[in-house]
Image (cartoon, rainbow, N blue to C red; front, side, top):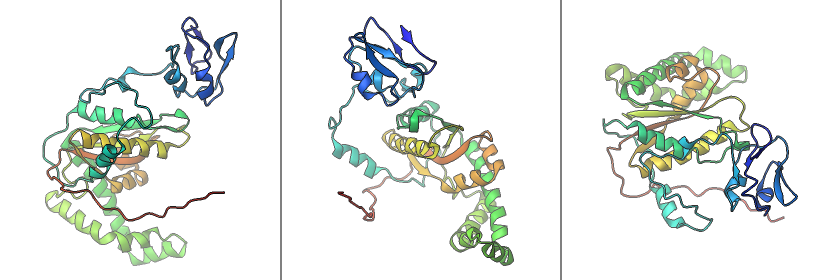
Length: 304
């Protein structure tokens, strides 16, 4: 076995045939050919696994690869490596169009193995420089979800009291900060109504009765943590749908956690982590007959 540095691939020299395929796909330039074998040349490997994936002899392994990511509990992958063009794009589009944001859930809890498989599907997403610094904090019971809901309600109650003060709003606007004025115009009334319903009888207009929540965050040090987390979240939405779950992204909870450390603490996140998405999960109490429509986007082409 040949290894250079803690993050570099490990080469089984006896298995290597010197084809050089791994050298051509390495984005970090840490592999080269010498004397008919692959040479692992110094540090700089990002652990992307491209070399291992392309090697016809399985002569390379990546330190740090964890079997947890491959050991699904309820999903049954075939293990097949599907080449580009090797699956029906129409079926994939059917799945993507059929997934909708769910706002009616059964009281049935979501088992932990199901949630973990959703997360496993999430981390098949690409990650900038292969940082994989994403984190997933699971609120696995309705009681835990309601506790976070109470913290979010407390935050927006404080924001609404501030926004209700016209002098404060105008003062912020004069300083070039129109966020509070915009919030008052666009969200104040609906938030006040939701808060009143919450205080009256715990009507849940935030998580809509979901019995589980996954907070998708990141540890410090990633090159593009927000993009990584949101790509993983997109995969999770599709996996949840395929497993029979309903899902909904809860932007109000993200904003509360970004602006108030007490809300983030209520979700169980340490201070150094950043929140990028909050995903409500549960068994849907509604069935949809057709996919959602979409507006035509602006699409540009540049040919030179």
